[in-house]
Image (cartoon, rainbow, N blue to C red; front, side, top):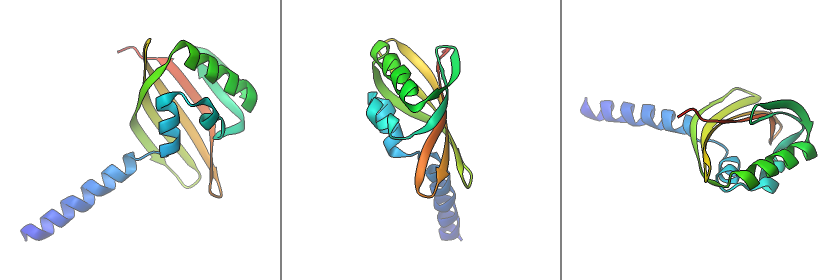
Length: 128
């Protein structure tokens, strides 16, 4: 009986932990501010919000805006706080720690085949 309980707990805990794993390339790119790597995930147009400026931008415009943000706020870490996935969409939320404060990040992705694309990106100053 105790063995069955342990197996059940291991399976439940493993399932919960697996749901928190995010695309490691995206997480790593945000952790170090790798704009080129982030750009490789950007869709052809991105609904982008950075510092309360909200608009739809082309991939190149979004890359420039993200690059500008990282020049002002050099990242030191990115911690995933929430992740959900559906069949063709994903939502990743996290905290971006920078030399000038902490930011809340929301990333909405879509999947087409094996390719994951960032459709929406919000980076906003954390109130904490």
